[in-house]
Image (cartoon, rainbow, N blue to C red; front, side, top):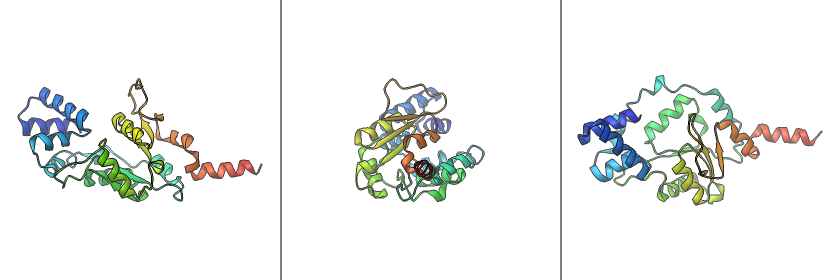
Length: 211
C-alpha cells in the first residue's frame, strides 16, 4: 500500500518520489493517516483517493482465508465479548479485507474512517475513539479491549482507559516503552492474556475443577 500512497502523492502533488515518501510519513506520523493530511492541506477528494489507493490494491493475491484466525475468533465467548472492527480505512476496504480473511461473518459491526465526511476523523484522535464507543455500544471504557498493530493508536487507547494489546509485526523491534499494558507477537497469545473470554479456556477450567 505504501507504494500506491507514494504514487498518489507524486501524481497529485507534483512531488519527486523522495519528497512524496517524506510527506507521506510526515502526515502518517502527525495524523495517524496519510489521507487526513492530504484532505487537510491539499483538499483532495477522499473517495477518489480510496479508489486509486485502497481499493486498487490487488488483495486477492495477497490476503487469503486464515483458518487459525477464524478459530481464535469463533472460540471467543459471545456472551462476554462483542467482536467489533475498528479501522482507519474506508468501509469498502475494511469489508474487503475481512471477507478475504474469511472472518467477515464473525463481527457485529465496524467503525471506520468515513471518507464521505468533509472532516475526516481517524485513530488516534479522541473523536474516533468516541465514535467507536458509541457505535459499538460500550457503556464504559472499562468494557473496551483493543488490539492494534500501531504503537501510536495503542498508546492513545491505553491513555483513554481501554485495555490495550499492541501487536508487533514480524521484524518489528521491541519499543523502548510499551504502548499499553500488553504486547504480543501473535494473536494466539491473547488466549493466555484473557482466558476468561474463550470458551475452550472456560471448559478446561471447569474440567480441572471437577478433578
